[in-house]
Length: 373
Image (cartoon, rainbow, N blue to C red; front, side, top):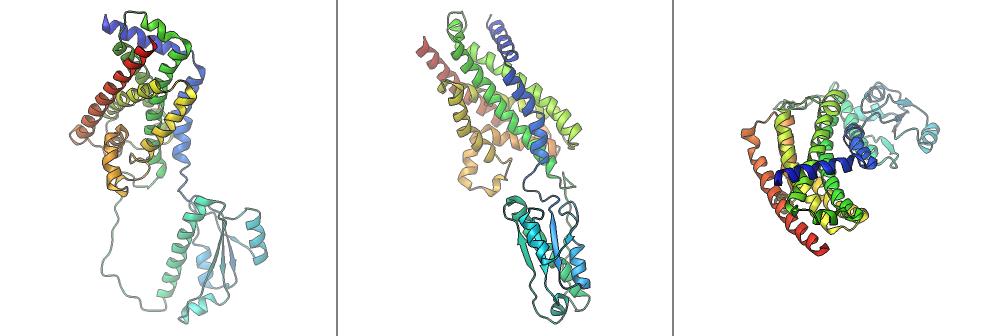
């Protein structure tokens, strides 16, 4: 009877979700367009930045510098005059404008230190911040190579050979696709379970459940398995269709093992959603609670920045969060091809954290129901 109650109540939650077009639209958007746009529009990447060059030297060195700005980081450099440079930047046509002074090559070969002026449109914050360092590196490399033809240079005693693993092309969209999928799994699982509980309270159906021969444990388990199943199916579709097929992200490990880890993660996050739903009296309140909980989970779990770069006490605190271990196992399985013998620790942590969150949420849910009764 208990298993039947859990199943029937879960089916009721699924029918209730199917009658909510806004929730269905949110699920569809989160696991399709949101994953695609979040992975392809990486803000820290310098891509096709417009640059103009004022070449007052007209020397082989200045020509070499002008030809060094190539896609995909920069658009082909536009050769302009001083007046055109200011007008183009005022109109927003160029993000960078490089002014090479007269006699630049002659001063360099004479041992002087000529100065190149770089104008940056700082209203384009991301490109301005990263592009300035890119341009400095490109100009320094070209000047060094040009000067080495005329002077003896000291040979470097070692040769550094770089071998890139797991993402040989250094495509940030491949990394961003998986991280965006993880964020959507966490967000939707918390929202759906919390909204299901708040919907019961707003529509008055929670009183009907209290009059039925069902226990708080059965009510809670029904919401966990039904909403967890919806997110699991949506994330599976997103992994195969959006991440692998559309974005062409290479997956090195077992997707089945990743989905098992996803199920454990959903057990923890759906319990967290119910816990938050017991405090909120309406969806606006629940949205505010989500902001306080979801942002730290996403920013400090290691998906956006490596955990090793964070303060040590933050690293230890975030070990209590399910996101941290989910990010670890997702990166290990999907990027590095890790097997269960490597990621079993993260599986154990997720099971333990999920059990603790479920127990806390159950106690809170029982007290909430008792108050309503």
